[in-house]
Image 1 (cartoon, rainbow, N blue to C red):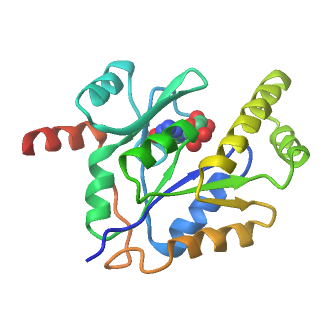
Image 2: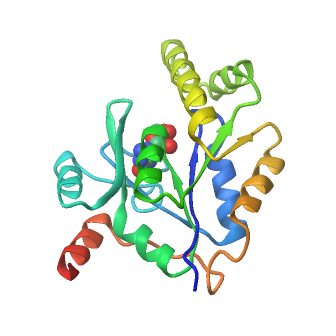
Image 3: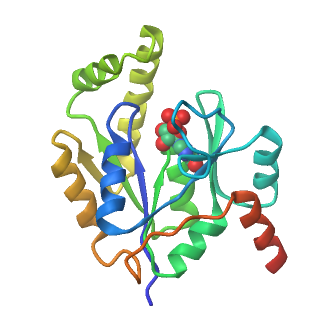
Length: 208
Ligand code: 5GP
């Protein structure tokens, strides 16, 4: 059976990444790679679904044991992709979607050149600013900072990413990403839960 596709999805804060990714997961049965992060959960976020919320030590241990496929610092916190579940899932023939920022995407492409890198673009800078402001949860200074980060990410995306998808119309953005993945997504059409990264790291070191 061929390996699944490793699909990296990046995009500036406020571009609507989660809406696109959630719909693509639902339509294709691909598996979402749950990242580990040192930041605290936001209201409504669930450990093991949105992220594995880990402390600094656990994160450092995962990095030191080679348990991260990639990791980066963003906004003062560390974020990383536990390696073992991604590798196992791809080997099963199931597609895996990573929601990670540009630095991590570069590392993934380096480690796994077959990965497809998709960048979700806002229709315009003005529209991105409008979306960030209308969420109402971000201070003015943070909005300026996020827009500056977005400018850099967009420049990088033009140079480095495989596909740029403009999220103007949500439905059209979703179908473009679905078509990049193609079918089938999983051998049995179901998605799988990942083990905790610590457990995955233990399993990995036990078998090496
Ligand atoms: P947030 O804290 O808003 O959930 O995520 C902040 C940024 O971190 C987003 O751009 C998201 O794509 C990125 N991110 C989430 N998980 C990972 C990861 O495992 N690795 C990297 N490099 N970035 C991540």
